[in-house]
Length: 115
Image (spheres, rainbow, N blue to C red):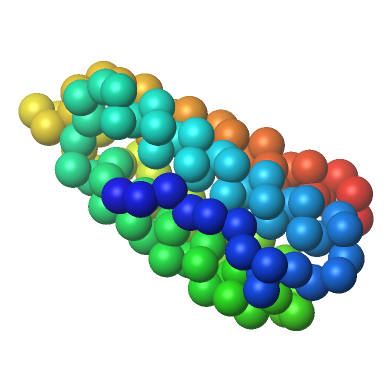
């Protein structure tokens, strides 16, 4: 899967919003790099794709509020994690799903604390 790139069309003109969106791109891109360096399950790849599609939708609607997407990200995490492969034969014990959940939850909690 390719890394996401920040594009000027994603700018909202609100520095805090733009910085939050950029930080989420960094989280997913870091995760992609790290997961490419270890053997992991197909479920993690599927989750990356799902997360990237959601993020691209969020970014393409530059003027929309992050609140809606924060809720969607929370739902994605609660529905997809733990991954179906976790603790099964397909699990590679790479801990990448745990890292993605931890980093994304920290990102979400940072927004909650500012509200």
